[in-house]
Image (tube, rainbow, N blue to C red):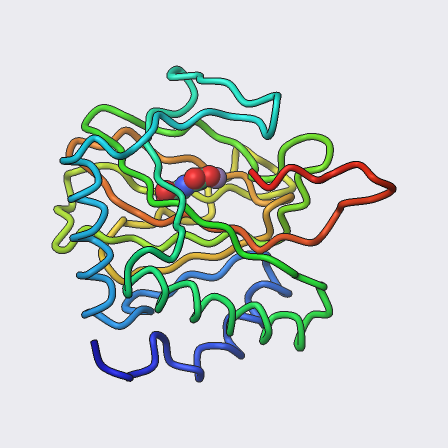
Length: 217
Ligand code: OGA
Ligand code: MN
């Protein structure tokens, strides 16, 4: 794979401005196309090999399955492929830029592949679980090339003040990248008609305090 940048650094200022002004940012063609193809091939292979696990809700010991709330299957990124390492390295650079611009004290990025089989969805939610989730900024990178307009699977972003007010619908097309404030931006994944692949990731702040270990996942 080439040494081209994973994303264009000129996008950083508009991203920071959008996060500050409205809490979310959306860009099509954000990620190098070759990298997004490699990541897509990897999640397809993981799905074929049955190497994805049904996703649940809640963290640590509170984690449980709720197919009525979310129907995706996931695999945490662990740097096992060059494509994963390139993506995680780019997100590390993004973390530094966000820290410099916003003083957020982000210290970690965690991310998983997500595979939504036909008929599945993720009901409206915010990404910061109750208690000590400490997720600050959520990211989603979409991986399906040529997503048909009638295939569903859009991510809907709602207003943080009025959760019934829809702000935008994101078509899950390869290379599209979204990020938003984890605690205050409600969103959902509409039922998909086709297998839908993405990488959901979160920049976290360290909340390990006084000997109580903050569960990593
Ligand atoms: C999530 C999520 C959105 C998407 O995993 O928390 O909201 O579009 N994903 O995949
Ligand atoms: Mn979410």
